[in-house]
Length: 324
Ligand code: BTN
Image (cartoon, rainbow, N blue to C red):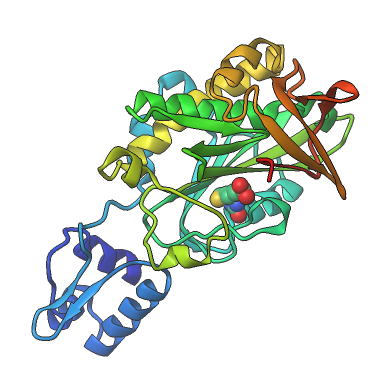
């Protein structure tokens, strides 16, 4: 609660002295200083000026469950069972996966201002500094089992691109299976984790990380070219509003996917495909396969025209890169 109170005072972007903050919250100045240090370590930029106090440049709009819910379409709000918001958590996906093992979490949303052990694909870390980006996981139950889920990660990427377009952000492309790129730089990532049976009912944790306003000093540890929405749009987008718009697209997309699968989305997905008709190299296990990328098939598999003809590649350990 103390940190929340501190953040809500600093949210106005103005200077507040340690004494003023301490008095308002009811703790000592040195306790304030310790909290400030912890927030800075978590990636929040705070100016500290002797004689004036502390200031968050540009101010802050914290994630707020009521504001997210206010932006949901009524039909989507009825499908979101519960929203779990944390200031800091190791990983929203990890937390959601644990809860899924205990109970049915269908429609539950987990979101956090900061992740201390954000999970990326293939064992990577997802850099998740405090209160500047979006990190969330939505749990969805599927009756047909994990085997019927091919194409789901493509649907998730497509839903986010469409939500961004509604916010006036165009030019975002999809890289198979589910990266969001802008001019070849990574804007957002999706990590699906499945709990349950390959053939029976399962719960899928749909984890999404979007770079909204990545602090430059935090970005040093990102091991690939990246970009954030602030750079693309030239302004900071309201995260509560953006999250609601994404959920509106995503939940409607999931319902449609439950009924019809990926088949009706092939053309739309390909219209955003970053590598359509390009020569690419696909890494499957230890093997490199070069070919012309022909998009995806009705199950969401990647189609590659190789010397041996057009071949379909499914998820798993496939990675993709432009030819050297
Ligand atoms: C990728 O490597 O492209 C996938 C990144 C997925 C990151 C998101 S952030 C919210 C959710 N929780 C996690 O720990 N990871 C996902």
